[in-house]
Image (tube, rainbow, N blue to C red):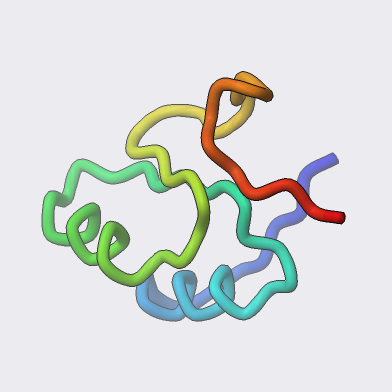
Length: 68
């Protein structure tokens, strides 16, 4: 399943992503180094990928907090 939300700007996209109830993993695709640096500082996720897919994390090998 894929959900798509149209936004007017990169900054608005970060605000939308940071305002969801999820936030375990995120991915940014850009050739603009400033946008990648901005995402590194402002995208609030557990795992952040740059210019690559965000699926396929190896459970048990990435330090994520377990929920109880």
